[in-house]
Image 1 (tube, rainbow, N blue to C red):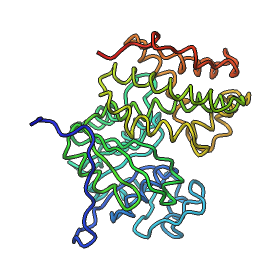
Image 2 (image 1 turned 60 degrees about the vertical axis):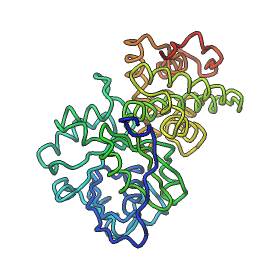
Image 3 (image 1 turned 90 degrees about the horizontal axis):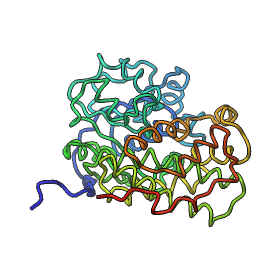
Image 4 (image 1 turned 180 degrees about the vertical axis):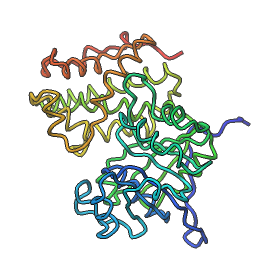
Length: 354
């Protein structure tokens, strides 16, 4: 028998008749994804307190059970409340979920380092790498908080916030170096419309979530230019090869890249107009410059911030990423979006997994 658990396995939902004490859960970040995931946790039976930077957002969540700025028209559960005090939100929490922009994670962690409840799982809902260091979000958490990596988990998958907030069925992967931590987190973050699976491939799960954003920007550029389904399908297919080669070069398991955190997330993000990265790419394809796109986006498109760090990391392992490199040139203004060419990325361009 293998000493390791299966790469990805389902977590059993508790019986409806089970007598379970609600877990006290903290979510930091009240944007669209943070609020949606807080709703997932609350709908699964947890007692959820979400931290919002702006007091008026926290009050709206608590008093009217809405977050109209990020999830218009969505009613939030009564066991989900908001607050603008980190100390208040974290007090007594049994699990802590982080959903802040990747480039502000380190400064946010510095604010909670001394008030984080001891020994609780810390869960990243973010999909990015840190500029300057190239660190994945779980690595930033481990470094900045000084917590054992066995306590850290990451969540990724085909998870468009508004669809999930509407209770449309989907699934995600919870990954942790500790199988027990992954199971504990997945059990709390599962309900009748959101199913969590677990694995121990943190590298693959995180990089899948990061890299698909870059390919989604490329697909959005093609869409904005006016190219059709053949071009977009070519980018998605070649993009999967590209992101898989990168992730495997950094220690990911190949199977992860054709699962929920890889292919599943890639399809959802590339195909939906709800995707922030797809929208950002579409604006670029329509001729808007980088600064203009940022100004028009109401929310963070993590793919735009991750292009540079990912290419820097790729260079350290001699991984060729022609599609991502072309996205970088579009962002720099040195490549006409109409010249985006997925057909230039061939198998010979990419290193093979050993």
